[in-house]
Image (cartoon, rainbow, N blue to C red; front, side, top):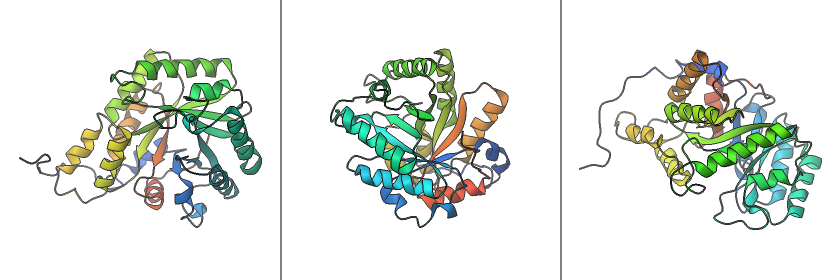
Length: 304
């Protein structure tokens, strides 16, 4: 018996039909690049609205000079660079201070995403983003984002609960209240709205009021998304891709996040207190593919 038996296609709106609903929800959407993928883009001004926030992903092994150069290029082309600061990749406090000094002096960086970094063990003095915040080295930054996991994180909570993840977010909420930092939660990508809606409700119940920038995979081939989803530990919403894989008529078509985002947009319209503030695009199918999709859905820059 096949693990993914074929079935009939599910009816759905034609491509782009949800654009009027999505355009307001996508206002201020951000996107992510790596230095090596950014190097293949001749000019980001041909792809993105002016002022778009662009996260610069710091993958283990990437020289800090390449990270700073990418941030500087984005700044020069009229965008807001937000480099990743991965705690477990940093050797010592002095190294972190050097990174921050270079980002600020050479690229005018005033925003950063602080996260654990993905290594199984810290390379030096820092294990998590809370320790980075406690250094005081980010004083003066306009905006600081921290990581969120709507479907949990087995690296942080191996037992499948969300106890440690929620405890960390409560700490970050308290940090935002005792400092002048403008903070938000940037999440891992998801493929289904229901787990996101449930998670946002859980945050509110826990007293976590940090606005959420929900991670979404940009258009990509199903095989590509499955590979990234498994590698990144995406949980319950993986079933959306599995259902898609069973549909022979859609198997070779790129997956687009319209349906998920439309459901979130409708929920926010019906619940004004809903904590999703913005959308963050992971361009897993390529930067040009993701930016074309954003443009076709009426996305505009509105960085806050």
